[in-house]
Length: 426
Image 1 (cartoon, helix red, strand yellow):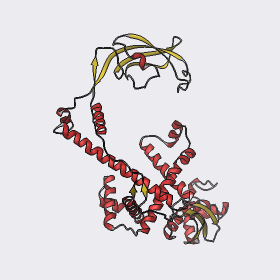
Image 2 (cartoon, one colour):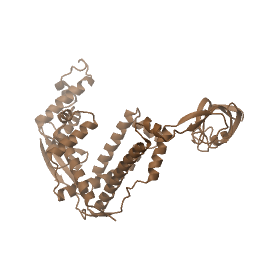
Image 3 (cartoon, helix red, strand yellow):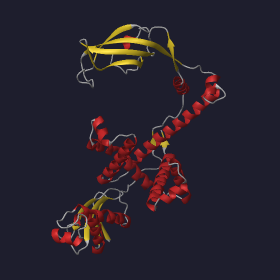
Image 4 (tube, helix red, strand yellow):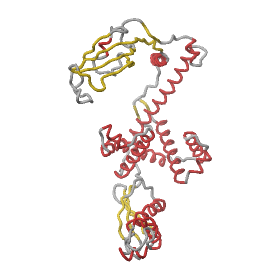
């Protein structure tokens, strides 16, 4: 196999890939073995027809189309490794020569990793990012923890906002019950907004074991079109009224959380919040600095690169959905969107991330930053921990291309640390 590369405009390249005749013959044989069971010729048992017989009847090139489908991915993978350039998009394939007794030739047009021409990148100025933690934020976090530990306790009084009621209800329109309008022993928190607008407010002031009607009008955009905009009456009965009781903030509360005193508990909350806020501030600073560097830089990002990254992003999202038992087709149906709309929505963020990465690659090159073997080993160790694997097991599974990608990620992180540490806040 031979490969020639022609660089095109906008960081694109055309690779002309020539597969030797004898190598393409191997692909033709694979195509025959794959397709022979589908071919039915009178006088021969299905799947037992010799290749020569099929080619005599249908032509020497009968299997060439499938053979090309087999040969192209294998040849492209080799060309990808051998061309000496960093290719960053899926290729557009065009068959040039597909004839008996001649080499198989095809072209692949793909994007090359762009390089940025940097402007100012060291000492860029950004707005000061506040990382101070207030006492009010600590108190709010403590209250959330109290809320999480709250108990619902039965009370003998009329319903108040925020209470939970155990409710029977049956809805009707013009005296006729409708499907889905009935519930028994339904827990409803007043003020949650989980029922039709106006329903929960009419329960306030009612008592347990009291029968009453709630009159509401379904919203015009209600999902059940047969009910949209119509007036309904719900016959209701409350079985129980419960109020939320928060635990007292004392040493017993701290002890339940694993601390010796309430002071130790609040101190731990503060430390965790300080770390979280510092991490968030660092992330905001990183984003601001990279955006500034990208503004100052010049780069030509190939559209094919953006589309490939966007497609990869959607594929990862689809995988996450499958783990939750949902397909992308179902997601498109439920969300009322399409694959094209998702791609269109995804691409701007993808392009922004690509520009940031390309700029940081240029910074690493300008500052002659390098990744040591020790740093690579440490990153592999972290990755193994994320996958709950032993580092040596992960290394055995990784090829040189995977290690190269990890090394590049570490290099970009070092470049990011460099520009952030040299940035100035105003």
